[in-house]
Length: 261
Image (cartoon, rainbow, N blue to C red; front, side, top):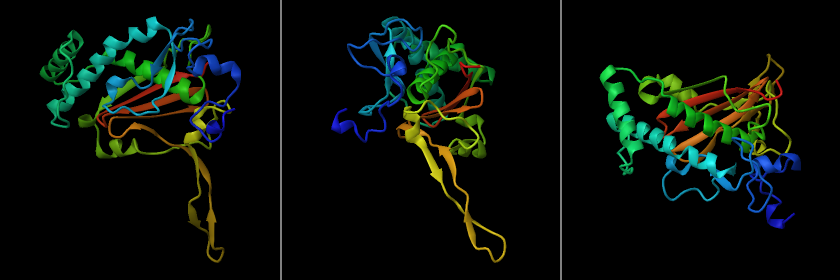
């Protein structure tokens, strides 16, 4: 073990059996998180299309095969362009200079159709990318969610909404910690342990007995890039939960059944 690694809690410290699935290391025996085939590329999670330059220096990566890695690029650009079209329509954020690729124009046309109909329709391309992002996050943080012969990463459900369609209370709730006391913990050594905190609020006791503390554990959000992308994932009984906020404008959630159930 290198001395420089001693206090790097963002590294994976779990069992070696999981390492080929959750750790990207060139020249090692890695397996794609999406299909389980040999991996020869790194998958950024989140993809850089959802971020702005300069990119974070410690952007999470997981192993992926070249086919899967390249297979999401088109729908990722489409998703980003759809979000930006909605943001621009609401004057929420100035429009960036996305390319004039067909995916961008398709997303803009799709959004215009939604405006004309007065309803934002569920979009399978966007849902596909949200599932892809969720699989990467739970693999990287919780050491689960990667493809196996008995688990293909198909969620129980995926949902998303946008800031203009939410109440102030709903938006504020996306800043909440995730209580952990009744939830199960990930594999020991998983990166998610870096996001678990114990809070000890002081509470007033009955008259004459002073104050008491009630410690409880919470999972904190991971802010990949301020105002651009953050996420949180946790285990709850037989389910794996992932929440993602993109541009503080699109809010998404995916729920998977745990692979052991």
